[in-house]
Length: 273
Image 1: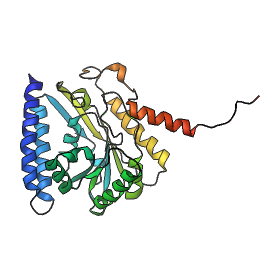
Image 2 (image 1 turned 180 degrees about the vertical axis):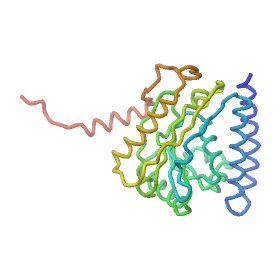
Image 3 (image 1 turned 90 degrees about the vertical axis):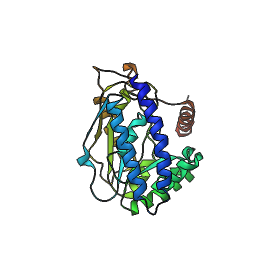
């Protein structure tokens, strides 16, 4: 019953706030809209606790630079983790796929909120657009949220980290704050059923500018994945299947691209005689 009541409230209030935010988007400036987004996310965090019984503990906010631009790079396990993250910032920009723009109301909200909208198909054009739009956020000195995996990960699993975040890190020349979580144990991806219990979202020590690509990518993945696994509650599993812990998740498209890329990079030549 908790899940039913929560989902009714979640989808109902989301629809109401979508209308409100669309109206706020017509007001001058970004501040009214961002205040509305903050009110929405804070309300949802309260409903997660009071109705779904999900108590989220947020730690490490002192690791987020108080002034100037920074990149926030979280583990993405749940529709809920973005809500929790947004509730902690009054003005946070974010990277999202262009699939959301098919809804005109959402498109207007995204544009007014200063979201960095990229082509889900990726490629050099998407990278150029990401860089161009992200630099606008940098110029304003705002924080930018990007999920380095580019996917919702089933609790316990991980996807391969995309290199787009490195180019932003390089262009911004600012800290990247990794974020670990186990919220997926209580609210896994977009599952209807929610498990009551404790959950954690932790802002980790920032990665300072200046690292080479391979070093940065290894360090980012290590910090996020290691701490996220440490946060798993093995006494109250919730959605967690212990066989999934540490599993690399790939869909068929991603697997085919990886195999093709590895084949192209493999050394050629005969076996010798």
